[in-house]
Length: 338
Image 1: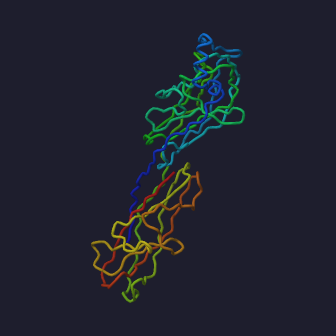
Image 2: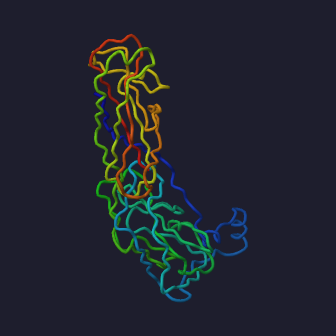
């Protein structure tokens, strides 16, 4: 007998969330230390005077998917969902002078000033408020030390982006309704609202254990070291894969001694009574499958739901002086989803 066991090992890599430029007001506020010092010597400190030049506060309602599946092994920092870009209507315009600005989160701990990633409770997710200005995409920064001089408007397209920042909690949900407020000074200029809650799941396929029966063979088939028996075909099933998986990799590891790494031959287990042979693992093309190494699985549609199979075969491979008897071995397979 020859069988596999799916260990479903989760592989996570910690990545730092990437921050993008904060947009027009950040650029207006950036000054060198020398210029800031000269300004303080030549003129009195400016007073914060942010107000609406026209219009007033607006709410932009973002249409979002009701369900978002996060690949189980996606590294932290992975963007797992971005909504459509929506422009608020009606619009308003502000006039500000030396006023702090930025985003105030309504659904989690407020990060330090100038951050672009906002935690969503203990879900393992964070969000970013994206916007488009002059054809380029930016992320609004968290409310705090950044200050802007000049005017601004609420006419820019906005989007809600989800980022994986930790292990996804079971039953994680992003609430619908108001999730954040963009503030200039003390003015709540734009409120971002989600049209509905988002149910978050971990995307992985069902992978049942596999048993491959190599059958009964005569020792005469293994005439010399390196000779092999006929192979037995079998497959690893990846069933009911949800949408949201962009890459699938698999890795097969021996649970017995690796006798020949170049030919992917593993030893028989301790309960076997035969000797002088091992088990060789082959891919669909009849080539040895590299062991203990991640291999890309390409026979699936990225992002789409579906069920798939990974075709393999195995056979006995002579390694030394032979003796008849039972000949069993085992390996484990691990599937990585991103």
